[in-house]
Each structure stands twice: as C-alpha cells, then as structure tokens.
Length: 530
Image 1 (tube, rainbow, N blue to C red):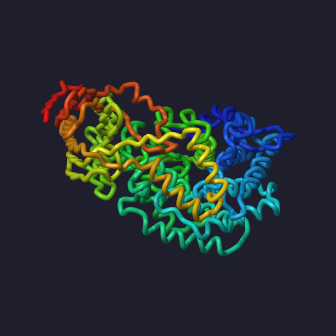
Image 2 (spheres, rainbow, N blue to C red):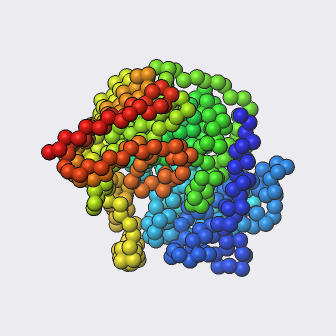
Image 3 (cartoon, rainbow, N blue to C red):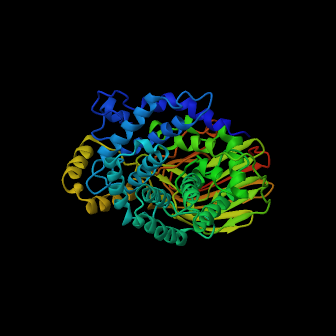
C-alpha cells in the first residue's frame, strides 16, 4: 500500500490532459484547456472549470521525482501562466465564470476554479501579477454574498477559495466570510456526518467535501473545520464496502469515485483507514483512467496532492460486524455479508456476497412511450430495521430531456438577452436543475421493495398497477443528469438483469434470492391481472 500508485495514474494520464490545452503561444486561445472550444469549435464559449488543470501542472512542476519529466520544465511554466491568463479572461464583470452555458454566473465553477487558480499562485508566487490578483479579488467578492445549500460540496470549495484569497491579499473580509460560512456549514452537516447532495448522502461528493475541508484545515488550523471533516470520514468509513464498489446507485447522486487527497491530509483513524482503502483498491476504483476529459481536468491534481501528502504510516481499523442503521440518510449497512441499502431511494442496494457483486438501482418499467423508475431520492418512504429495509412509494416518470437545435437556439437567445442578468440567470438555473437532475414526477404505478439480509439476500418487489410493459431489475440504473456519475465500472460486466414482459395491466410480485456466496436461486414471479 505505498503511495506510488497515486503518481502512476497521474503520469499515465498527463498526455491526455496536456492535449486538452492550447499550447501554441501565437494562438488567441493560448492556455485554454477546453478543447471543444479552441480546437473542435463545437461550442461557443470556453468552460472555466477546464482551467483547473493548471493546478495539476503546477504541482508536477514543483515535484522533484526521478520519473517526473515536468519538474522545473520552463515550457510547463509558460503553459501554467497562459492558463492563468486565459482563466482571467473568462471572468465576467460581476466576478463570476461559466461552466455549462454563457452567462451562467455559476457558483460552483466560480468557487472551484478560484480555489485551483489561487492554489497555483500560492504554490508559484513568481506567477503573481497585479492584474491577476485584481481578478482573484473580484472573483472572491462574488462568492462573499452567495452560497449553495442544495449541493453542499460546492460550499466547501468556496471556503477554500475564499481563504486562499485572504492569504494572497491579506484582506480580512475574506477570512471573516470563511468562518461565517464554516459556522453555517456546521449546522447543515447531518448528525451522521454527511453533507446534503440534493437531499441525500453521496459518497463521491462527500469525499470531495472532505478534500476541500482538509485543505482548509491544513492552512487555517481551525478545529471546527477538522471536526466536520473527521465526522464526514466517519460516515464514509461506516458505509465503505470490502472492495471497490462503493456509492453508485445507493448515493443521492450516483457517484462511484473517491477523492484521495483529503484522506491523506487529515489526522484520524477513519481518514487513515480510507487512505488505506483507496491505495489498496485504486485499480478497481473509478480513477482518472475512467474519467472523461472534463472531469480529468477537474480531479487529476488531487492524486498528485495525495502523493505529495501521503502518510508514511497508516493505522489499521476494522469494521464492526454490527448492523449500521442511518435513519437520516435512509441507509442500512450490513457487514456479513456486505449489503448497503438506501430506503429513501426506493431500496436501491449494492451487495458483496462471496465473490459475487450485485448492483441494483431499483425497479424500471418501460412502456411503449415512457419509462418509470423507483430509484429516485425521496420518492418513497421507508422502514429501516436491523437486517431489513422496506421501501414503498410510486414510480417516477423519467423525462429524459435532450437538447434539440430549436431548444439550443432558444437557449442562446435567452442567455444573450435576459439571461445576462445574474439574478434571473440564477432563477432559471434552479429551474433547469429541477428538470434535468431531479426526476420526481410520480406516476400511478405503486411499488414496495422488501430487502432482507439473513444468511444471504432476499429481495421482494411488488409492483401495483403495471401497464403493458417490460420490467427490469438487478442492474445499475439512474436517470438523473449528474456529470460525475455513470462512468464504467467492471461490476457491470457481471450484471445479470432480470426482465419480465407484462402484457396486461397487472400487479406483479417478484422474489429474488441469493445465498451467502452470491449464488442466485430460481426467481419467483406472481402476476395478478386486473
């Protein structure tokens, strides 16, 4: 469990990362890391978050390792400076930047890109300039009066960004704002240790929040920040499986990655145990080799930081075999065998039975014209019992919105006119998030899922008022638009979905049983026609 694998995955992906950057000093877009904008020309604006890749280059520029060809390379330094300059050019007059569309005034892109840019300037002070610091202060001022409550990992990124602005400018208003927001975040954290991501706990985004909090603690030494980060690590360790199949359908946002650097930075047994888990399981995790170009730019630097700050010795911690009931999150975690169920998400679960891994995102019903799904946050009520979860509710109709040429033209016309105004842009963005990320339009199809863990696994699904359709069970499934989810995981190759055709409106009962080594027993099906 050495730290070397962190650097291995970074160096393997560096040619791809560098290929995202316009490295031609004669180009008008020199330093732009959004390849779709500067090379393909398939989009009409550059996403500011791609510029976060400058931090990966800066860390490697400073990293003296025999196998690191980027150490003190003058060409690399010129690219970093160009990336900072291009980021500055993207800052709007109110201090915001855009990620997904023009005049978005994005909180997350502003917070996260500022955090990365300021980390670079703190790391390489020779790149400071009065013009860049002026832009940094403007962007920090945008964040002062804004917050994000629905996706709280974004707030942790803003905390680090603002503290970095304080370190660079020595302006106390940024430091004061940080600790006001820290106090607010403390109140938002669940007693179970997680931060809300659209109303629920999510493993990947929680590891990202831990990462930002760990960096803030490292600089500020604020004990309130440390306590929040350690509570989050305690939650993560309690729900962590024995192998790399964490998160996914069980989490509120379906992420399956783990950001490693926060665990390496933090003191504490749970942080140590999570570091050990990531090091041991890295090849099986959704890691940089699995990510698309966008999220490679966003996340690769955390693996360099994990290498730089890796602990020399990790304390060993074993899981308790007692059931873990987390009513606030709606999760039940069993250890022998390992099963984690989210009752608030329709009973979505993951299980490790011997060598068999089972992922089940919920009940899917596909009619001729529509799709319906149970695995939607808060679309069901649940009972959490030791060894058992019962979830019931109504299937949600899946909208599956897609862009069309007409929608794209209408969108751009709005963004270039009324959408220029920050307040209106924020209102519209909240509406868009509800449409494309949340799928909670309930149908007349009712369901009950009963998951029992006792010397194996028994899953009983009762689906009432099913129209003529195909029912699908036993596979990874999600329909919400979360960009950092739905990456390929090897467990999908072993997936054995169960399908059932229903020809008339019916009530259907399906019982699936698995023994404690994952052997599937014959499926029982009862169909009662109405």
